[in-house]
Image (cartoon, rainbow over all chains, first blue to last red; front, side, top):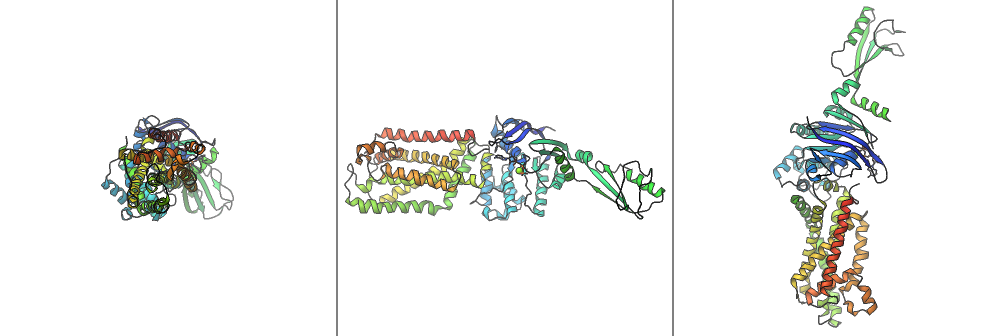
Length: 310
Length: 253
Ligand SMILES: Nc1ncnc2c1ncn2[C@@H]1O[C@H](COP(=O)(O)OP(=O)(O)OP(=O)(O)O)[C@@H](O)[C@H]1O
Ligand SMILES: [Mg+2]
């Protein structure tokens, strides 16, 4: 798959001297959903701002679908839609006016049918004549998405689209994102809800202090860094682990009531370590009451990664 | 050229004034009517004609400009400041649109509104006094050029301002005094020689004088010079705006 966005050695130093990006290399594949994760102030919005034309880059190169943004910003920007992190909406205009305005701004002929479709997809149709100021925060967020989609972009940036958005709207939104992807749109999103990235993304990038510290296929990442913690609760407490019970590190809880071990990698159903442990327990006549397992989430991996790079 | 974008900005801006149609038209018309009643009819009836033009007629061009200048500035400055303030400017910055096109949209809309307002005041004045219009095309030319120049100035103000107060302070503290001193209500030839020379440093003198020349064919400064000055002001504003966009001044961090 070709890359639809490629960023090379990108740096940004703000006027106050703060280095927000320190040599970022990133390549986004056509048609994927890419989740960019990182703690507050990591540089996510700055990175998106540079690609979209809101922030001037200090050095480096950004190529959008074969077009260098420095050489032909028009061609590059036409392909991009942006839903900004801040809820910036027009003060005096209706939803319809605002969304139609966006379409015109990106050089597209007026197309009421398309605008109507976008508004309907986002359940905004019945609000089309409402003054945006009078909408709730979640509704304003939808308007921003509608504005970003008004010109049929090929690449959509969603900068924390789900901040302050209720469960239902989040579900709708992700539904829509999936639809967009099916229609060939590349989606780059940032979020602080890591379960969302885990659900939605094809690939994950982690940025911290202006540096990309990891870019990986989500499943590969979970396999590589994911862990499953398996805990066997015993019917009778033991005071020490019998010699040769298990070929892996095993730990006994302080009260002696349960045994725990950690299995690395994503759960793929091929690892028989639990079975071996249980057989050994049965062979030694040790009874157990229950077995529980818990998988580490992307969130744990993320916290671990960012913690290490501190 | 991204014409749909220019059109979008232009009509978006005009629509904003349409929503406040009453304030946008009623208040300048009312204040102009007041000037005509007080200066034109009441005081004017006791004044000598100036260069053969009655006082009521003499002040018409200046009064039109008084409104056109303040309205051009306030419309264009508000037009660009508001999206900066609300953050919706992100959309314009991320759009495939050049600085020239952005300016065409914003300044075009503000200037259009001023020209319309100028014409409305022109016809309102007709209700109070009778006056000539010797060079109608030149008058229109001055009106358009001045509207554009001051809309550009307003655009610069809107880029520079970091609060709503600044948007109001400049027209109030700088433009209004200069307009009053710029020969709106008198001919600078009435001033003593020293102050007449000082007045020539006020750029608005040339605008008012040139515009009045188009009405009555009388002038204190040569009309070519007035026209040249108007054009020079326009060029300076264009240069500043071009520089602002090139450097991303107050727009792109
Ligand atoms: N205009 C600016 N001038 C100076 N510093 C800035 C500016 N904008 C952002 N920064 C700084 O750059 C860093 C990166 O900011 P950015 O908004 O890109 O972070 P982020 O990853 O989007 O964070 P968040 O998750 O909070 O949205 C921050 O430390 C921020 O304070
Ligand atoms: Mg951010």
